[in-house]
Image (cartoon, rainbow, N blue to C red; front, side, top):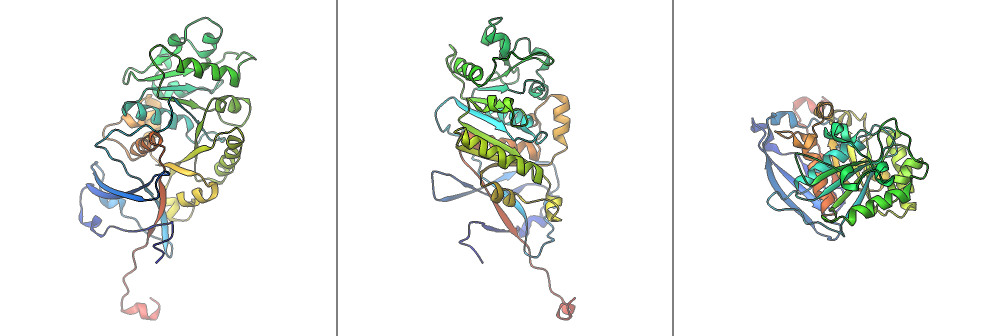
Length: 353
């Protein structure tokens, strides 16, 4: 056994089959970059699905799917690390991997934890963050009109009715021409204006970056000092993520963590999709969260109701909340491999059966 190896081996819980309901005690681990020790904790998760559906079926000779490990101490508020406001850009390079969905759910999760959040939709031509938040009918002014002097900054900020400490700022309206002078310096001016507000600076300024690595990408990452890279376990997404990582580091952003989105355990078991551990080894980034494939994401997007507000919570919603918790404390998680349960050997196994 390689107990000293970094890829910790977690054995399957033998008592899982005896539990008809899904009150399961999960052993969770977290790694604090400021500490060399490995802390562990366990807590029950109560939801409505059957625990037998969580029983892993192993197909490979030794290892299977990457398991997500973290620690959440629900009896306390997370401790905000770093200097405020923390300007975080959520990017990917490739389109369609879930940047806007991540921005909406992580942003509202931060607001539910008690922090003030301003989300900036930096996608000029194809903005969608207001749709996912259900705020599309309340966007009357944008950042372009603030820069032109047509309105004040507080008039362009759209406050969420569900959580008053969450605000949305759109760069421009759809089908409108962006001024040629708008760029990274203009976005820096907006961020500085948010810091100097009379009502106080927000704790988090989250920038939803547009797809690609063109001028819109450069503009979005200019004021940021940390980044969240969203990727899926696809080779095309991983290639773009690797390219974007290099561009972020060249721009001076060293604090880069990744979220692996749309993970399907059935494809990983069939070796048709890379595991989370494989993705982490390829990109070499700290892991902020892993989001499983969930059909509820489509429903929440069409309703304009973020996934983290669902009751009861879904697995993807819980994963977004955990990612927000780690973002607050500048923590990271570790993907480990589950050891396969040894097969029962019968009489005919001696004959190769």
